[in-house]
Length: 255
Length: 311
Picture 1 (cartoon, rainbow over the protein chains, first blue to last red):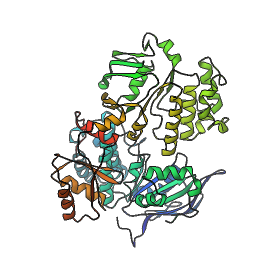
Picture 2: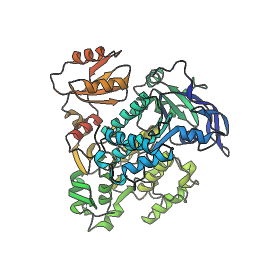
Picture 3: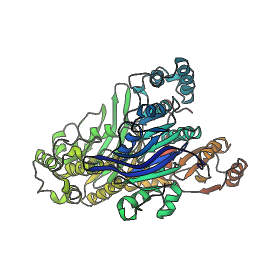
């Protein structure tokens, strides 16, 4: 993705979030560009979930200037929610609804017309190879299949940004790659992808990656550049190096 | 010397076949991995081996004890760490450890040596409620609790799932130390890169074992030619590789795309030329050795397909 001369779709400046005395997000600043696949990595407890909840309009920051899809996270959370999609491993689809019912439900929630839902649902179900399973309950589909459908449903209303929280956890290696095929395609069509994962090879599929350590962004760059900067073989080793040697973390990360 | 023996185990849940003719032997003191995605049958298998559920058919022997007839004796020998965090969230770190020691009729003091290396890392937080620990710390506490009665066999169900890369590395370092105590350890994981840390592994999918071997042997037995392909635009690269007539598989792997050709007579230059024609820049095609994940995918391709694999 070429990113010169464009307005960032997510703009974060000096984001601070405190819970009592605990600083979960300690002065985060970064931009995410339109159509970019942005990897948001960090150790358990580093503050990723807190930041994602703020960007999705679910929680208010303590201080900082943050806009998502052009809307302010303090006052315009409803507009943010209409313009984003969200998917996680834990919550994705309603198990006791069928494939088609799930799509119709999500489309309806986002205010799509019945006609639009119907036309696009048929195309989507066919694309995913699920035509035979249109009226099958989600609960009886294999996990990999569910996750691909969940992603497609999360972007069914054509949001500007989709947030993916560990979307491929526990999925088999082939399906995991088919899933990334869908991510690439969405980004190619201009949807910005904001993704967290514990599979470090997946971090390398991102256009840029940020790594959080102890509430701060310790590094942010393209995967290739991070690997060069830290002189490691892959992103996994960059991650381990930064988490184990907080001394290596620069005071200011270039955004 | 055999520690765990399974013979033709089957298990169905209503109309889902969870285990489909599972057999294996695991030696005493072995660090043995069951590698596979969710739904492969790993948890079902571990619950049978730990006497928590019954197989429909087949038998399993652990430390010369039958998992059905001798379940009471066997339970004293087993340390089990279930996949879902199952400690008492409203007890402190220390209280949890004390609780598990006392139900096995022992004390923390008696077996402290065994858990010391792990427990010292969470000891500064011993007055904290277990529910308030971070993922990596929960995992260390759960392992300490599974170890505190000095088990002969340790059964760890996806101990590293959802845990960050640093804690995962540390966890495997702890297992290596425990292995020196002569404990038999079986561990399941969906992370293929962890296979290399085991003595032997079983690669599982849809309730079946596709292969059991030492990790290096699995890699040796990979049959295809494998290439790492790089170009500037990965999305376009994958799309174009799908159009290349010689392509058998093309899957992204970290910084490159792993490519297997349909025939062994494949000519590397023909691929480079094909990509250059489609305006790719900085094209790099080189033969590489496979990892466990490549092997897993090759084995998957030789298994019957399931629903929804289209597109």
